[in-house]
Each structure stands twice: as C-alpha cells, then as structure tokens.
Length: 332
Image (cartoon, rainbow, N blue to C red; front, side, top):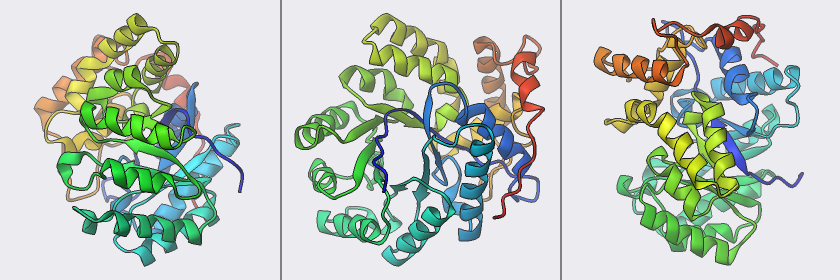
C-alpha cells in the first residue's frame, strides 16, 4: 500500500442520469473533466452522497470507479488519488464493497456510517471500521455526519477511530463550529498527521480559520476554481482573500444549500445542466425535480458569478473544451 495524505480540495463528484434514470456516461466524462481535472483539485471522491452512491447497485458503483479512473488516466491525471465512498448497511456489505472498490482502481476509501448507527456505541463504530480496514489494504477516511442527524460521532469516538491503522483523514461535517473546533483540537493532539477536511459549506470560512488540512465537498463539482481559491487563501492565512472568495460564492451557496438540505446535490445538477456540463439534471428517484423558483435563484447566482452570461447561457470559455470530451466506456 502506498502512503497517501489527503490535503487540499477533494471533489465529491455528482453522477448524471438520463430520463430513464440510467447513468449518462457521456455527461459523466464531461463532469470529470470539468471538476476532477481542474487545477488545484487534489483528489476525487466517487460514490458518495453527491454521487448518489446509496442509490446505485454494486455493479454501477464499480463501473463508476472504473470509468472515473479511465477518464482521469486518459486526461493525464493518473497520479490523482481516487477515493471510493462505502455506503453500506452491514459489515459484510461494507467489506464486499471495499474489495470491489480496490479491484476497480480506488486508491482510498471513505467510510460512511450505516443507518443502524444512530446513537451507536463507540465500540460498534470502531468494530465496523476496523473490519473494513482488516479486509482491504487501503487508506481510509472517516465520514463525519452533522451531529443533528443523530449519526455524527462524538469526539471520543473520533479519537478511537484515529488510533486505527490506515485511517488518514476525517471529513469533518459536524455542522456546528463548536464541535468542529473541539474535534479538530482533540484529534490533532492525538494524531497531528491525520488530515481534518472541512465540510458543510455554511462553515467553510470559519473552519479554515480554525484550522484545516483541506476541503471535501460536492460544491467542488460545481465551482472547483472558486473553492480552490478559498482554500489557497486559507492556506496562506490571507483573511481578506478568504472573505472575498467566500463572498463571491455566497449567493450560489445560499441557493444550493437552502432547506431541505437533502436536495443539495439535485440542485448542483441543475446548475451544471444550465452550464452545459451535463445533459440533464435528473436525480434518481425518490428525488423529484427541483422547483422552478429554486432554479431561478440558481440561474441568477450563476449569472452573478460569471458562469452564465447575462441571458443565462453558458459562457463560451466554459463550454468549448467540454464539447470535445470523448465518451469513454465504463466496462473493464
């Protein structure tokens, strides 16, 4: 196993579907070129929440990993780490998914908590993650849910997970600054080498100010350059530049991350479709189409950011290179 350190901006990719809810591989190749190959993106996460990993079959998740790796390789990005999300409902399922992910070309795993983990004891969480680590020789990142969801881990649980071999990062999505600050301080005191990756866009500016080794977000699938600008400003301790980058994105962030939060990735798909990065904003059911009033807000924010022109059409500089993306097969 090659040592891997997760830092910088890690993009959680979205997955395009056609009208029949089947994967649109041509659009996916465009998505990968647009966000995963953007300057400053350090690694790529697939089959996570943004990629609707929980709604995919095991065969589809494997195909996504293979297609992503092939697209990145042919685009000169073979050295960029590819991380597979493990969204399972049992230890047996998680181990099987992890083995498939490694065989398909994943360099690391991000382990999500199963639905049974609401209020789970530390011993149960540690046993679950350890079983995956013991079965598959890959680096692992821990996915920390918002505490209000009931699936977020306590500081003590995160500390116990940090002691496991091959755990290299925590995607810190507690969704409160108090928890983020406490978890950051405690984990860094235990393991200074373990990466804390900021999440929950409402808190990015504050999280970077407290301290962070990187950002892991689906927002990077939509505005990779702007999120990289925010990260670089934070790494340079340039508060005015951080504020400027955050303020620029704010209208779009408010439109994408409005309540209900579970539709955030469907809204990102709407935006990417408006930008001609993908052909359809379809999300796999039970998601329903994003309301028109929300689409209007998204379009206005994209115009304000210069990602659409004044008439709401994609800017030529954005569209031109994407139109030349080849359709790559997802099979082996």
